[in-house]
Structure formats: structure tokens, C-alpha cells
Image (cartoon, rainbow, N blue to C red; front, side):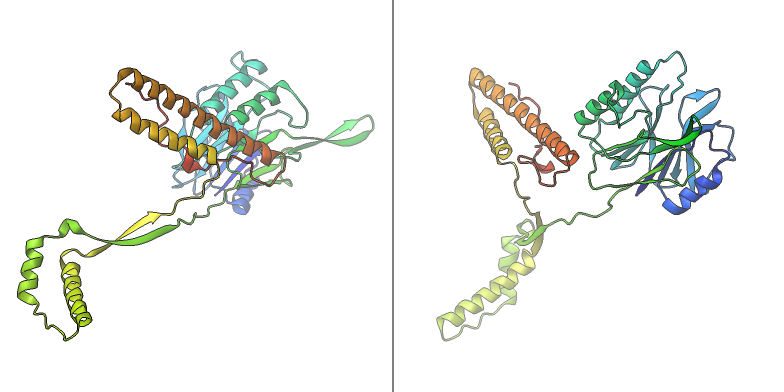
Length: 373
């Protein structure tokens, strides 16, 4: 799948040829356009095969952020926490995508500080999901220099294990300094995601100061390694019916040697079992290699303590075991979160080796809640 994000600068109604070119060349499932300045009654602004969504903030009756989603793609709108921020969130069964626009001019008495706090709160709620997350758009926060806004976004991204992928400038404008013209550049269109296998591109040559940012996910089906074994279906076996079948339908002609007799008896019994208790295939998932040995040991110890807790009758000892299980739960959570953050930091620093102690998703455990007596 592909998702595209573009700040059209000054309204989209007069730039439909460019929008159609983006649709034809990129073919995104979702196309977010900021500074669209589009009112809801402008129904003539549409794209064949796409549905139009608008942000709830209507500045002077116009939406500054819109999204075109491919029809029948399965993506549905998710309500944002704050109605007065320019955020559109859509999701399907395994992906959540958000388009963001942080304008310079604010409405309803919002200052830049208040608006940034509301934006962080909205993104925090939107990031609370187990799905793959792709948040992008024009944040109007320079990633080239340090600022309080950049620090807020960095802290938010780190808390959810998200990476900011764009490294080159996404905005450029020709300005006049004295008698000379120069090009001013900045990096204010950002992409935050937790899918490190996704591919992003930044393209210019569009009728805007902002470049087009697109994300391509790797839709590769993971191979499932399974082992197939065969076991007899004893649920359908009835000894009386098998004995009757053997007595009525099988006449055993014995051989002269012992080995021949054994083979005759085995063949008859096998034929009876195949009829009354047929073989059935059982497929087992192959156990994945363990990366974090300490985490696996903690999980095994927690499992032993839970069994001990169920057998213990003394209330004081049960409470002591419950406290130990709670400590192990907290340790497992902490180790998983720490390993994820270390993995993100390692990718950001450009290292290719996997950090030690990185757990697999299958090591999370099913129940991390506290056992109470």
C-alpha cells in the first residue's frame, strides 16, 4: 500500500490537475492534502474512485486538511481527541494512518503553545494501538534545529517506539535578499512510523513550496513454518464395532514362519484401525528462536509460580507468591519496552546489528495482570 502527504499551499480547488497527476503516478490508497481551503459544499472537487474526508476544524467555513481514500479500501475514520486540531485518522484491520497539519495561524483563541499541546494529546491517543502506525504531514516544526516543539515530538515518538524517517529538506522557497535571490530550505514535513521496513520517498516538481511525501509498505506475507504430524482419531473408535468387524470380515490365514504370522496380524489390525480410528493431520507451528534468554527465563519462572499459587492453600504464602508474580510482570514489561526503545535508537543511529536482548513479539506473554488471592 502507498500513502501520500502533500501541502498544496493556498487551496486545492485550482490544483486539481496536479492532484490527478499524483493519483496517476503514485496511486496511493490514501492522499492527505493540507492547506486545502475547501468547503463541504464544493462537491465538484472529487476524484473518481476515491472518497473525500475533511477535518472538523472549519476555518471560515473551509477545511484546511482533507483526505482522499480509495473506495472500498477498508479504511474508516477514527475520531480525534480534539476537534480543533487539523488531524485526520483512518484505519483498517492492521494499519492506522494519520494526516497532520499544524498551521501558523490558529483559531478559537489557541496560541501556538496550546495548539501544540492539543496536537501531542491527539497523537498520543491515536498512537495507542497494536497496529502499524504511519503519522505524517506538515508539522511546521523544523527538524533541522532544536526547539521545544521538536523536543515534544521526539519525546512523544520515543514513548511509542516511533521513528522520524525524513532526513532531507521538504520545503523550499525563492526569496530576495537585497538584489540577489536565494533559495531557503527547511525540513518541516515529517513522517513518524513503527514499520521500519516501509519505504518513503520525497518528490518535488509539484506546484507547491512543499514536496510530496509518500510511504510504501511492504505487503509481504510472512512464511509460517509448520510441522505436520499424524495421529489416530480415537474419538470415533468403538472397541465393540472394531471386534465385530474383525470377526466377520477377516479370516486370517496363518503362515509357516513366525515373521509371516506377525505381518498378517499387523496388516489386519492396521486395516481395522484405519477404518474405525482413521489418521488425521495435526499441524504445529514451529517454535521461534529465542533472542532474549533472560526474558524467557523470567516467563518460565512466572509460569512455575502461577502453578505453585494454584496449589498453595496457605493465604500468606499465596499472597507472597502473588507479589512475586507481580514483580515478574513488571520486569517483563520493562524489559520488552526497553528492548524496543533500544532497537529504535539503534536504527536511528544507523547501526545495522540487532541490539542484544531484543524480544520477539511472541515473548510478550498472554496475561500480564496481577494474581490476587
